[in-house]
Image (cartoon, rainbow, N blue to C red; front, side, top):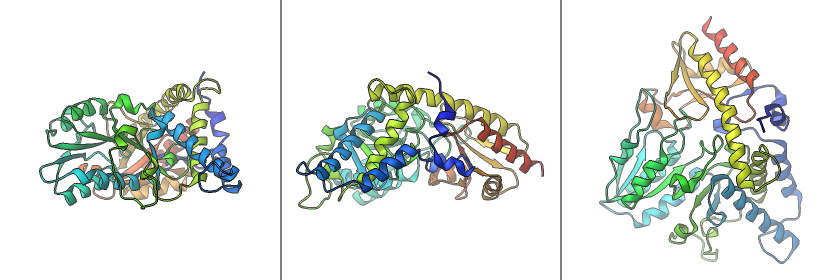
Length: 400
């Protein structure tokens, strides 16, 4: 089975507006099936979760199915899937919870490659506990994060290693599995920010060595919320702050208040949409792995075309040459502010914004300050005509 991008695009009503969307790393477009699942749940009889009435059973079923869907997507266990307002909110919550056992002399390791949501929660929690923060730096020339940049900082006092599955600014995909194995040897937990990786490649959080793995459905064609996935055995050992009458069961003990049932229904629909790329028959996890391989090949080919085209243009400077990357291209134009480049593209109907995209440490480490760069991200609905439009707009810009 091949990747049929025309059929994929037909499911996205927003594409009819005419823009070429390279803004997926900040939030993807949403297929019709997801919107219908959200709307259908909102207008159906719904109640707090329970088994007494049809409305209660519907709410319960929505939650159970969403946990199963996310677990299938990342290779985790459904009983370990925690939903929250966003990955950022969940990271802060888990950081506060884990830090209850940290103290002076303990160490937390973060990287300068990461989105700030996988840095600041851990840094602030460590500082509050009196623990030491260790910073792993990436190579400024290639944007690669060498394994030894992390492993050289590990010690018997390391309590947590926070590392990205893929950089949302540069696309870099570190060797997380090797880093995690080294972290586990010294008794540290590993949190992997999979927000940018999950939409672009098959994920197996267990093989990756992630004790905790986070992702955001709105980056993989779904609604706006976040998920943190851990082994249920680990979650059983953690005691978050919560309301007195709320359940102590895992994973519910980490979910504050009533869950957004309509968004969870949309999340399941997004995962099912991805799985259907590889057909309608067979186990969903199996289909997801096959589908994400097809998607990865499609996106990689487009990204290579885009990178080659941009690299051939005068004044355009590409950022990042790590050997493993997501289909994410960050670039600058000599003599122009990134925001002005993004405005030119927007005027041409090409959505490729400019920013540090909350990867503020990475942007500063590269000397980009708080301005950042232009970022073009390939998504499941991107096709050759989109790439052509971006390259034509950039050719027009540098020829002036």
